[in-house]
Length: 94
Image (cartoon, rainbow, N blue to C red; front, side):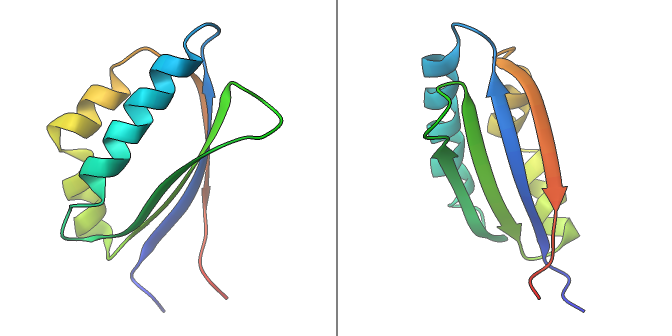
């Protein structure tokens, strides 16, 4: 069984904060992709909803994910008060 950590998150922006959240997500993506344990970290925008974003992320293992969650830019994202909701799906490739 793979030790990879794979998730997809559906992120809803607070009303009026869509553009600001998009910029924050782009910055988070750029920095996260430079992390040693990051395999994939991509942000997409829902074509049918201006306030929904999709985050697809894969890390080598739980240690790489833990390291990511402790980065100053990740902590900043979680404290930015731009997100209305986040639904996370943990998955494994079959």
